[in-house]
Image (tube, rainbow, N blue to C red; front, side, top):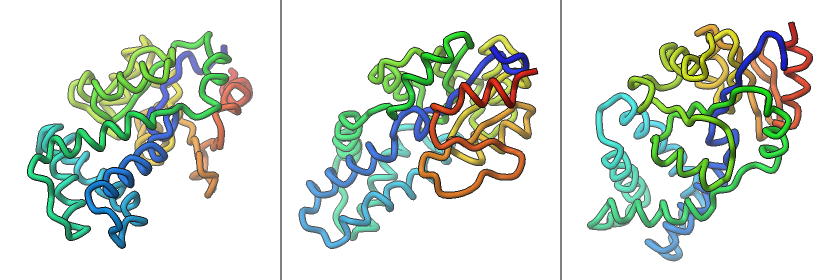
Length: 233
């Protein structure tokens, strides 16, 4: 075990689970069922991904319930496509969610990397809903310790400094001894670093360089070696 790092937190969506692949396929299937042959079907995945950002942020800020943000996303997508929204928006989202769940899959590098990291206390730090994120971990069969969300961390979501501090406490460690590994530059790299928690960017797409001063990996396969070199004291 590296001397400086005693525990590791992983982001979930885009880091352990291929959220984008599952969500893109699910919403494309859902929209095809709602509006067969719609000329904008090739754009649906990108539109849905863009809608996640403001509506999930509204939920995290306490501006609406988890169910309401789901209804808002369905309504907004239908508006964008100029199609009539289903009368039962909750049922419509549930249909999408069924497709999404069937697409849940861990990236191929996850299980081997976790096997090499068994000596560390591990955890998942995610901005998703507690129940949904726990269900993902169960479905993937991953042994990654506690699943930590803003719902169990006093309402603190990434990139709040209080979120990282509370997550480190959940592992029984100070933030400086916990490494956060994730794909979002603000939530998983810059945010924790500003709160005194070391961070590593997992760039699954391999499209750009990491911000100065931050290590970048394109696969979790490189994490054990990074721990042994960069964080060995």
